Image 1 (spheres, rainbow, N blue to C red):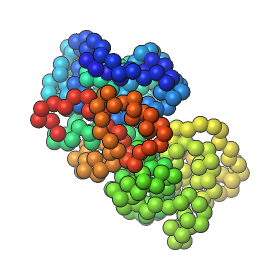
Image 2: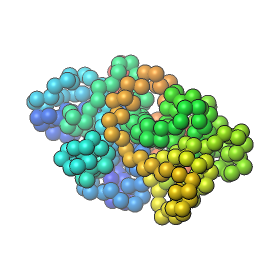
Image 3: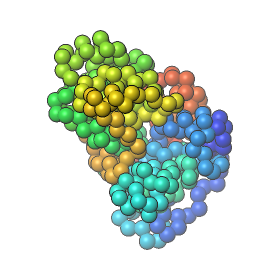
Image 4: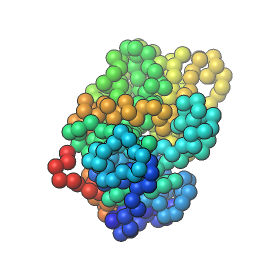
Amino acid sequence: MKAVRLYAAGDLRVEDIASPSAPRAGEAQLTVTAAGICGSDLHNFRTGAWISRSPSVAGHEFVGVIAALGDGVTGFAVGDTVVADSRVTCGVCAACRGGRPNVCDKLGFVGEVCDGGFAEEVVLPASLLVKAPAGVDAAALAMAEPLAVALHAVNRLSAPAGSPVLIVGCGPIGGLAALLLSNRHDGPLLVADRNADRAGRVAEVTGARVVDLSPDAVAEALAGAPLLAALDATGHPDVIGTLVDLLSPGGTLALVGIGHGSLVVDPVLLVEREIALIGCHAFTDELPAAVALMPALADRLLALIDETIDLDGVPAAYERLLAGRSTGLKTIIRPVILLGSP
């Protein structure tokens, strides 16, 4: 079968490799129908930060159709469309036992600690699968995993009813957070991104207002209302510092971006203005909820797609995305298109 494998930082190869072995007890074999390229895939390619095995089939955002089941698997049948959970956890550490598997002591991700979804087929533990609703385009379903990440961040932010929310970074997570807020929050929604085309796309789909990340521009957009909720999806220390300054007293900043560098924040500022910084990592139990939202959000999710490619196009897509040449949120890979599938 064809697969995209990461060998080392900067070394990504499209190869013909053996199909995975038949699923063992508790496992399922999937025919992968769609997969998304994540910012963390690009980060791992550029830095090698999370390479724990080499080579490894990349990709942790994907959907597939069950082709075979191992012994003891219940709740699924051959032919079911399923979304993959990206997280590989130990299940026994204090975080896992406390219901916070996203901060597991030994947390790993599909595509890094085991082969992922940038391939025609993959075998995974059935415990990592969520059954998908019928009739939803596979390209939209491939966005369920990042939608769960965005949902976790939105839940953690917990914006006050009617309050404006400012999202900086209109990549996949920031854009999907904007989509969720447009669907569930009753306050004004502001978005900022240095990529004007991408910000415009998010605004068009979500009804958000695009603003420059400057005190005057944000103040004008707020029209006197306090800014009590902001979300950073860039991970850039300068952006985070700017958002801390822009927040009104009592405000909350949710941090979901993966970036570089050190953050310098005056703790007195946080204390005297009661500013809360909240880290948001992956998701806890939000994936089933994100999958359940798919029928309602599918059309708008599809409108946020940047490009649809095959496996051979993945290296060029990495190069394009790392260079910032994108107008949408997500590049979707279609390894296999099954007859009759949406």
